[in-house]
Length: 197
Image 1 (spheres, helix red, strand yellow):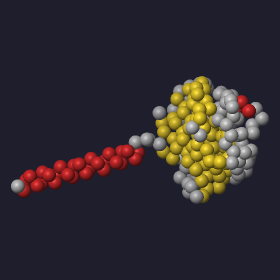
Image 2: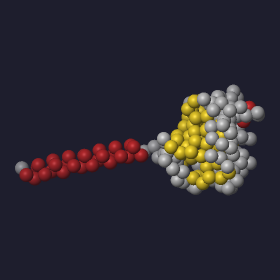
Image 3: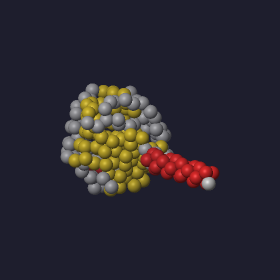
Image 4: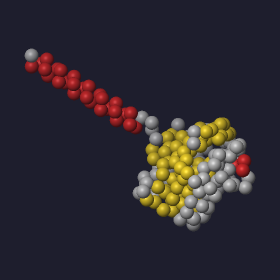
């Protein structure tokens, strides 16, 4: 009888271990890593003259002109970001930056956050000089979600659940760091999740 009890106990332990393992797997199963820790600028380099503040889980840029540039380089990925912008904020998420010391739309892909951009075709939700947006969504004065999918030469952008770029195509830049821009007005980022694909 003792061996039956021991066997049952062993089975229960195995089931518990399996359950705990599956629970842990489910928590990490989505594969996203948050590039913003909310307390420091660890993993980022500051270039330019922008003023970056960190606190309460938020990175804020409130002075032009500069970037936070990731130390790591990324090739194919999904980004999920949460940001807050003023109606006149000029910002963006730059991907596959070719020169981490001099970021621009000419040497990276700029997913724009700028409701009042003079050339509205490349305003908020567009990829500058790659994929236009029409109509231009407005992001100013509220928290927004943005999803960016970069897979080879194909790009997709979703702003607040609405597709703004369905299939942008360009093959100039294959990989590179990510940069957050502060070029005018206030921009706040509280999440920047990334998952390789």
